[in-house]
Image (tube, rainbow, N blue to C red; front, side):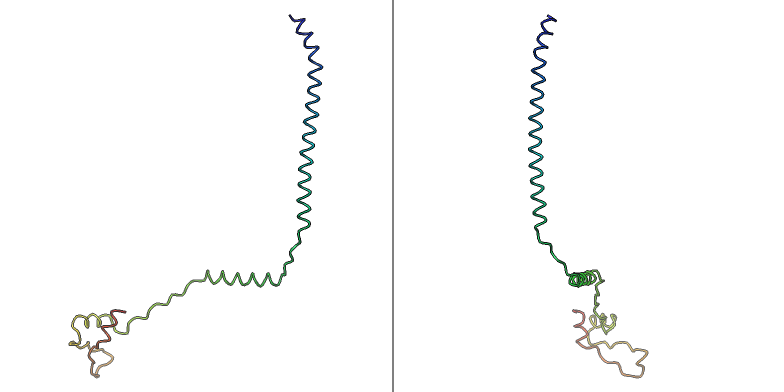
Length: 131
């Protein structure tokens, strides 16, 4: 049986070598075709890039636009100024007393207006509560 296997191997060996050689040649051709296709696409891309018109940038215009953008950003980042409503001219105690007792009670004498006659609290003072 070993002699038959050796004879069969002698007949098969050249055929297998020939088959391997043909297979390698086909693979090489296929790889060459693929490489050529890739090179063709790369050349087309390079040509398209080279044919594209280059845009010229005016440096002065660019600097002006950049300065405008910086100003806009500075405005956005600047702290906002909130204006508070001014404090009422009438002290809070007087407003409370007026709300409780109305116009019948006179406000207390102020130390700075000693000798002057105090005035009665008027209706506009009550309206300030709604503001």
